[in-house]
Length: 331
Ligand code: WQD
Image (cartoon, rainbow, N blue to C red):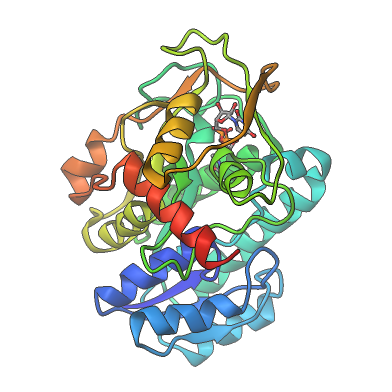
């Protein structure tokens, strides 16, 4: 299949490109390099041994986007491109609504023009909001999202639902990620957030590498086994494979799947596993809770196993080993 991957040089997009090529798909990448680096393209070609067609275009430029479809006979799209920093979205909501929504509308309109009706969309468990309690399951209604970033994901899901309701010839798969972490075993590609990381794992990685002084653990008074926050960490390679399975196995119509392990892991459990697996110490202190954090967030992943034959295979130890291996190769 000839697959256009938007945001294909980003953290999850790049790992998905590797798995798509592994399964003998032809891949075309479009990425504006806002939150990714051109060096990743050469690394993807090195890992896969294949050349990859790349367009450094912004999806907000509808004419440029149209030219990609005019020049290539595209069968399907995996749509990753979008701003994704929760804190930044609170400070810059208009930037997030403009970028994430308009770029998606441009993409869907151009797909319709060229009769490309198969799309896998990168959504987030954050659309469940805060009203429900785990395990999160796809039949739950979307809730009050906690940030403009999360709201753009919920709005795009609604756009896709309305599009499908208007025209059942679309094949739409919405994938809701829990907490993506880890890196490709080659150590060539991994997570490189801009600036000081907000998320736990990249922060732990930088503290372990001596690039940041100390990890602050946000609260140890939650109603959880050890008092620290519990999340569903999913290895980015497992996540990438979930996209290939979705492309290959999604039933007709519009389908939504959680991509998570189904297992909750606490902050302290992740930190101590990282220390043990990599034989190092992570300097941390316990501080107050972070506003907006929930005690627990993890998936019910059974629907993805049943319908697209996907489940996580990597362990927390694999996550910690591969993350540190990436950092060591890129210090
Ligand atoms: C995980 C746990 C923190 C940093 C975010 C986004 C969500 C999704 C996944 C895209 C929590 C604790 C964290 C730190 C800490 N992204 N923590 N010290 O908040 O579960 O979800 O990433 O879809 O939209 O909100 O991830 O990694 O920030 O936090 O103690 O320096 O680690 O309190 O319990 P989160 P996170």
